[in-house]
Length: 518
Image 1 (cartoon, one colour):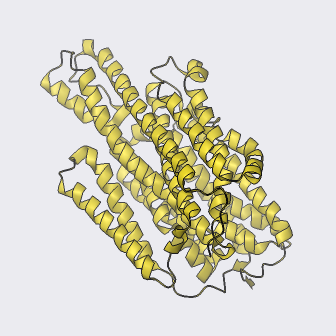
Image 2: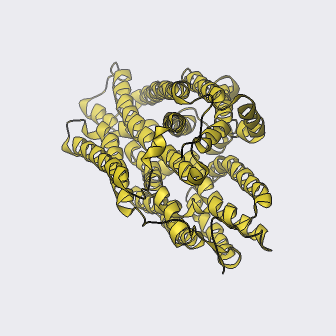
Image 3: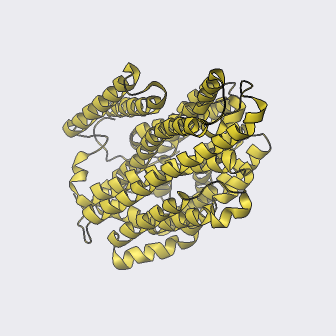
């Protein structure tokens, strides 16, 4: 295969449609896997007997590796060849998906998800880079638009597919479906995609920076996740947190001294670039934690089937799909700053609405309880996403556009890791406290109370053990539902605060008119 450079993209090849198809399949595989899994988490938890903490790690193990290595994945593609790195990423993603689909235990699944994240970090950055290199400028916009539209459709398909598979007792198929999709993508890439790399890049790959970032994030994620079980005074907790902070501190110090850093810190001298990344950190943290706990609430507490829970998420991506062009027009007309303030405010209003949702009679009350909140959040994201991309890319010089996009992508993953770890740990502790308070008046033996507190680590999936008298079991089941509802309300209010904090970052730091930083 021929090799192309960044500065001289080849014309759309005769097999250009296959180039597009292969990149859509590869990136879509990761999108469907993540969005489908969110809805299937309650079924997975019940099947494997996972605790709430383990469930947090099923999500975070993948995102942690993706956050830590997505920048180095892009750098490897630029240096060694995007096609090569994407194929290696697909192979690792497919093999780890097979391991996840066959997982006999939750520990096995967490290990598989860790490898999936590493595969995704090699696979995901290559999609747009390959399209950019394979199509001429006059064809490139159409190709990227097709890729974006396909990705948006897969965001819609994922929760619905995950819900129906979980309903059928086939949550493992979410992972196993990646095998045929990945193999087809691999074959198309091998035959139809030309190799490309950036011949203008100089310097080596910052492996040490990637390692320090990974260790730092892992330390913080483990420390915050273990907090609810072990308490802040446990050596594993404060040791992990201290180690995580030290790792990230060393990463920043290293990047400041590197001639060719993984993350050029001077870009943050731009107020707009700093503001948009802080906005991303807070808003996408709210998105990750909010959707995680909303899935558990709908299925475990409100009585939705997994398939209906998947459909319940439809108001979130649909405004983004239908109104993104309109949102882009607003950004073009008024600049990015105003929509970046209004969008997170509307998204926060959606979380605030959800924070008032109590116990319902089921899906029949959806449009007076959860539906409006999800729709508001979807509208807020619609107002935010396109202006955010424009501001991130416009705040730096053109030759830093890929780096800026990669940093912002990494920040969104870091947001997910930290929000799920911190808010998840707080939620587990809150649920245990609320469950104890709501069962205080019940006539339960010390052994029954002890078993109930052990079950509290499973959140809404907590079961009523045989130690609890039959007469008290309905009241205990209701106490579990109410305790989770209390916890959910707290989580949604925290997400509201994060969303509104992101609006504050936009108002404070994003400039109405900004000059690209060189």
